[in-house]
Image 1 (cartoon, rainbow, N blue to C red):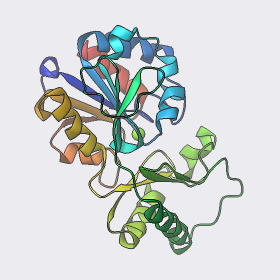
Image 2 (cartoon, rainbow, N blue to C red):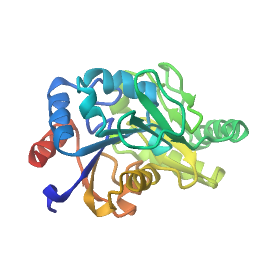
Image 3 (cartoon, helix red, strand yellow):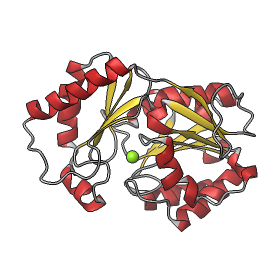
Length: 261
Ligand SMILES: [Mg+2]
């Protein structure tokens, strides 16, 4: 693969640029800023925009001049945010910080309620016991996405990593839930989570939207993620034909960025 001809570098966030829900560290922030000086960069994650702000943007001291090269796709590509000078047409809500939302593919409230009910049924049918302690919300309604986190959104990282290291629990949940809500996309997100979005609205959808907006063809893109496996939430990007590199964590991502530079 020729890195030099890639114009847009797309990253997953949790497990790729940072540990799950953990802030971007200084080394990674430096590398991302250097990359923004040369390429367009996008980040696609299951988290919400406010999670992006907390975890990523607040630890990325990039100048506003560089931010126009950055594109944010929270909630698995169901939404796209661009900096005000990015060249993308502003047709939707402006945010005070200078980010504007270009689109949001929301699920109807009725469908969201049905999804939440189906997630609860799935957990029972899968035969898993309720964790002794739950940290924060377990099922979060993010409007364009419903996210189930087995131990709760705010669970400590070590507990999250120990819960389903071989992904078998989440795979079981995904397979049961898919049958209950066939009109939605169901995929594994972070280390304990499963995300539900509109059918066909996934990371690949976000990538194709970016391709249209930026006039960058798929073969000029590179995607780096840690869940590029069937039923993983990064897999759709590979299916869309984007060159992908699967990483085991942020240290491997750093090495790739260094090669890109
Ligand atoms: Mg990930």
